[in-house]
Image 1 (cartoon, rainbow, N blue to C red):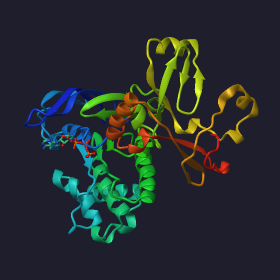
Image 2: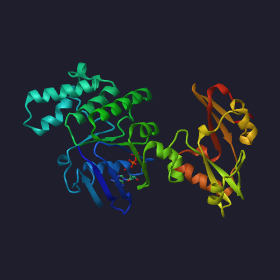
Image 3: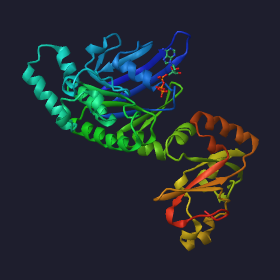
Length: 364
Ligand code: ATP
């Protein structure tokens, strides 16, 4: 097993475009690290540089303390699982899993059999060992690809969006399996995804990238509760954080639906500003009818027009349209485009108790 250290890593393509720009991340031995960000942010490129499939333009890549910039992929002892599984259709499940061992040569047949059977048992593939990939479900194929990765006893596992071809239910199952497998084996893992749930549930830590630049590396909880900037705040969380235009009037903040007295601390921080964006997570809203009456009396409620509601069983979303001043609308438009979330420009979403059955023009 091995720690992976990226020091000021740069990837420049021919035209001078930096797909990865001065990224430094330390991944501890045995750690599960997620690389996440919108399409094109450079996460796959970074992963491919770790494994050696992409040349490194600048910086140092260290695996187990050794610089590997010029090492060929086969000399890095890493296992990569791809999105499209990359299985050999003419080989059985057994032979697909055994493939990396056969490449090494010199491993006795008995040991190959034993290691393949162990990997198959871990991944519940034992009864399918003689089948061909064509006769497997998507989830089973994905497990074969994982079997091929774990059989090698590599120093680290690298996953490039391994679940994106599976349907939602299977993705959930496989997510749990990957998490369990990684804990049991304790192998350093780097996992690229753009899926919120995978990012938040699988990793010990998450690295958020934007246009090739690292924004924040932190535990999922820290990212959620203490994002370092608007981009991370808007990217982490589903539905995303609402950004509401807020007019500063001394120690008072005027938002689309309500006004707020600021604490001394906050008032000091916004001093000198006239207009800002206030981040409000959807779950911070409640239906006023269900709120503790003492809170209601303390001025914690407001009236918002509910445009549309979506009922999800355990909760429901209420969409609350608002108008933003031009200056803020412009800023919101840019953020919305980058986060691929058009809706956040013109409406807030409140995630509230499914029991409340909010209707239009009600209070939340
Ligand atoms: P996705 O989630 O869509 O796979 P990503 O975050 O993994 O995106 P990369 O595939 O790492 O992004 O690509 C990062 C940037 O580098 C993109 O803008 C992409 O167009 C560019 N890029 C990737 N490969 C090349 C290449 N061979 N030549 C030039 N530009 C490239």
